[in-house]
Length: 149
Image 1 (cartoon, helix red, strand yellow):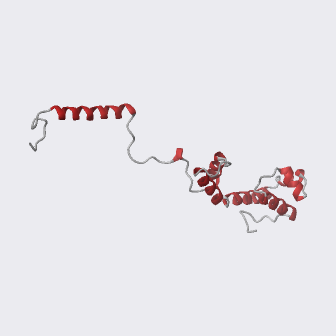
Image 2: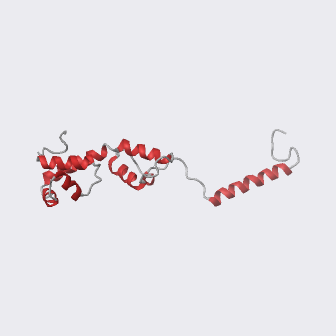
Image 3: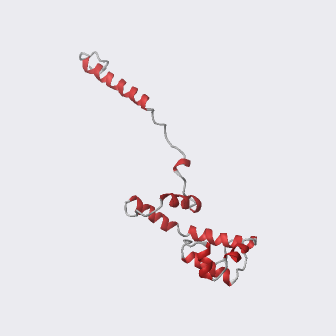
């Protein structure tokens, strides 16, 4: 595995535990992963007292999930098409926010163009246009302000 964020040299047991978790897409509990890797949960938690280990572990964790982005994007498209009913939209959104550098939530996007009229303003504009139409229909030819007559 390539160097990730640190020069820390993990032990064979640490590498084995990482492989177990990544093979299961991190869907195992710590206890379950430790059991499969033949590592005690207490040892796993002791490893986290070492800042270098934490940096190494976190680097691999971040990289693993960043590499899942194409799968997440695919699940979102399938969900939008009604093909992925088991997807978790909130989990997908959180993954995108955390790992997709190009993702910008709708709430944080810049608004371009002019602001839309309020309902009342739009209604007022429609009433003015309707009144002008009625006035134009009722005016005798050549008197409605039309300069072409």
